[in-house]
Length: 347
Ligand code: PEP
Ligand code: MN
Image 1 (cartoon, helix red, strand yellow):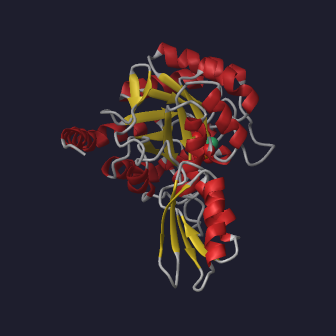
Image 2: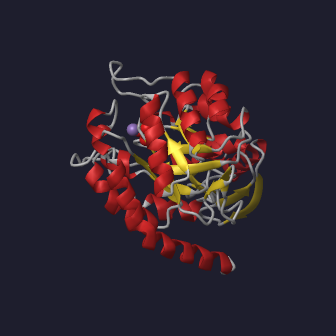
């Protein structure tokens, strides 16, 4: 971090700042300037806290971090891209990961039919919520453990990995017993006890969704919670953020993909269903996901979207999902070629 002193700061004030820096386990690397002193400090401590403290010390004008506040998820710490492995399927490697399934697991027939549709279209991951974070307490809340059981059965019957949301600390172990990937939803992106638990209690892959109003930095700090608590198998999902625009449910922040790719080695996927709330908008955004260099995408499908118990308007029919999967094939081929080329170019 760099601490700049006010013009005319006294020698005693500069010394006091240096002492405080050292007390917080940073080393003072240089002190430059006569009229306006600038102090450079390095270390692995909590930079955000240190700057907050130093800004309040007399004579200090400002403090800025040099490195990002997240460390383990940062490209500065690990330059090669992380591949999250879920059995024989992966996210971040040389396959464009497709996660598809209903918003909520409803019945055995429904989830079985969805699993068949995903496998037929070439997807590797079956999604489905058993614990649902719903805005209204009167909306369907999920089948809970029965939903997990049905999801596992459907996934196993069709050779698919299952992705499902965990909402509470007390359920992490239970959900991890059934799932191949734990989803942390938008509303829980800053549920710090939950992030710590999925970090410490399991090595099951985690799909962390961006919060409706989470900045990229906050999003990465949430991922850092999981990794620093012991679970490195994390990938990120951009699912749209809340803006002034009301034409769509959320606004897909397509910038997030290249921005995250610059900042982190973790894989990034897009969720055009929750980003738009409209099934007709999913195919063009799916093409965008491939073109922008995402590692995969997640969509919602349903055997009868009009009768879905949640998120029917953004759920695709099996036939339109199949058609979209065929339509993106040439784009995915190009994506693979680009990946391969990037892997051959030394960083
Ligand atoms: C979901 O994926 O079903 C979901 C609830 O998404 P989000 O947390 O992004 O709203
Ligand atoms: Mn949904």
